[in-house]
Length: 437
Ligand SMILES: Cc1ncc(COP(=O)(O)O)c(C=O)c1O
Image (tube, rainbow, N blue to C red; front, top):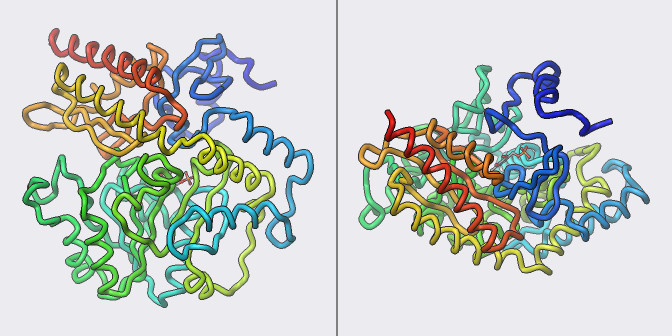
């Protein structure tokens, strides 16, 4: 019997039986037993507004009826075969992905997670170019396998084990803390130009591929300036390296203006990886590329669960729902509304140092107004207070001082108001502590 334990009892059991690296977001975590649309419910029936979507995953709302129907129908019909047998849902999903991705991206490898999609993408890029070295951005997060952790530029998620070799780190477009101490009006995109120095000084001069998140998710919604990825792509083309857009967080309309994050910069990637929002909570990921690149990987690959009929049928229903319910447009509408509300809050609470992101992929960096010193304890207090107000918001960034708002894309302006109200309570709580000390 699941879901029958009280919060305290469950916390103790989790500590006893789960590995210690599985940390809670909260000091006092609720026990969630049910989800519906943009709401979560604890074991006592309390309703929480979910503004973090299970780490940017519940794209169309918890237990969406259309998605559930597709999952249930498939689970009752055919659950599993593995990739060595021919089934239709995986192929239908690949066709759908080809339809909604730009350019000639049309050949997919369906996986179980974003990590696995990134592993596959790097492997295909290496085979296609006959080269090996990989470039990533500082503050990136690409997953938890050996290679993906090594491509993650955030010590909080890198275990103290030997990393994979052949990975170089370029500067990200982090205007609030510009690595070159410039301002966007006169920076001449120094951050993007850094890539050429990285290629010349940290690689053989012939790297295979660069992988980057259009807006860095775990890194704290770090959103590069206009022109950034255009410049990056120009440099990669000059050195004959491929470009993978890691759309695990930014994909499926979340950034509002486009279906894919990288389209905000008008750049055509050679490959895209995706996961999270694709399954609305069902484990699935995918890597999509061009026929020319895919056809360089001819050796057999088996994936026991990747592209299984149930997750594929679920993902198709998720994509259809995003399109039918115009959730991309809603991400833009509610995202812009949230940004306006956050700017209002900033006037009263100057520890809101930076508000950034696009659509429903927003970051709010909490920092000392004068020195910009990161304020992780205050950020944690705001997140915890919002939870006590029954609003779930996320937290992240290299220093843990960035609030992350990335809700199901079905949230409304009324939900945004409720979220801003809870954040105000959190900011007031932090201000009171500051006034006392
Ligand atoms: C940008 C990005 N890439 C890859 C991953 C890894 O995905 P998964 O946790 O499904 O393996 C994540 C997870 O947070 C992510 O944010």
